[in-house]
Image 1: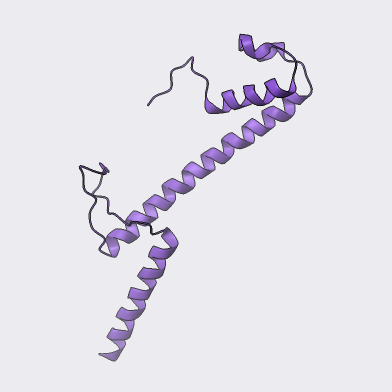
Image 2 (image 1 turned 90 degrees about the horizontal axis):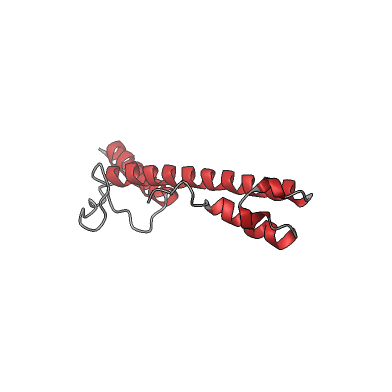
Length: 121
């Protein structure tokens, strides 16, 4: 769901709550940071910025992990996702509770078996 321009982000709301607990100023009632002059503001701002960076990195990781799951799942022959339950583009597959690591382990095992069979022929 798109965010309404006037609606505060999670980071903004968190900052307001953190700051309200430490600072006696009532700037948050007006929604204007210029009313805040306490020394804690800089530290809290850094905390909020770092948490926002962490959220971006986590989103990137989960996106990458999902893509790896799909690539390995398709290569290993996992069943296609039911479009009525999971409307995903590009013919996604259901990998269940597997992670990229467990799928890679399964792929490595199958490759090893295939190489062994090929060598014995």
